Length: 308
Image 1: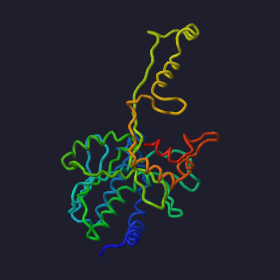
Image 2: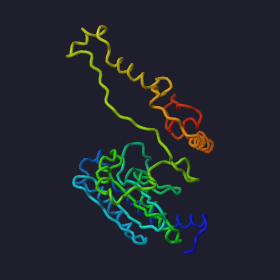
Image 3: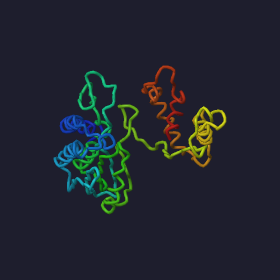
Image 4: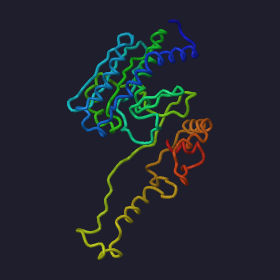
């Protein structure tokens, strides 16, 4: 195949999705492959294995040069799918996704459901199609288009796990087990994020950090009757509020310790500004606020920077 123009490439990929991928995503949505946190008996139920088999079979049907497809299983852990595609370009690229799903939850329209795929107005509804069933298909389709046009690409590894929605507690064990095969990637592409709109390509370059911990307050060495101690012994909840107030300003949400702050690079500020101009109120209008609730700020750019 001769090198295609961007418009022709878009059309070619669209045809690939329509002919080869969408109906597989529909089959995938029907599988209640809930993450282990939501289905402790996942191994006995077999839904994760069914989703893995669907993905593996589709991969083996694709005509990529010297591609190696393997399902890897460590004892007592959810499986991963590893696809290796040799390349003639420089560097190593690791592409990531997952096949496990969030639970059913509520709020579905009457004609839709978590395991009931529905294609309407070019959008596919159902649990897991966007988070994160599409990732494998998108990654392999992109590489296939490059190879068809004889465009050089780096050595690529696609790693698809099945424990992400539970916190990926199985993934580190596979990273250790596959250390030599994974090597040291020069670029990691995580195909598991949102997008601002459907009319352009979006990249997530940074996310807010997350710190977890346990906080307990003890004021007495043993339990006493509340009617006897109230008003004399300080309220433990009030002490907790005072401790938290040392970390976060309750009115603004600003984190107070200077050591937890970092300067946002100028290029990230400029990217946030441009994204805010493009998206406008869509940054916050898509969230189902209850009457009276408001976003942290009205400025879309500031809200985007809040996530950085």
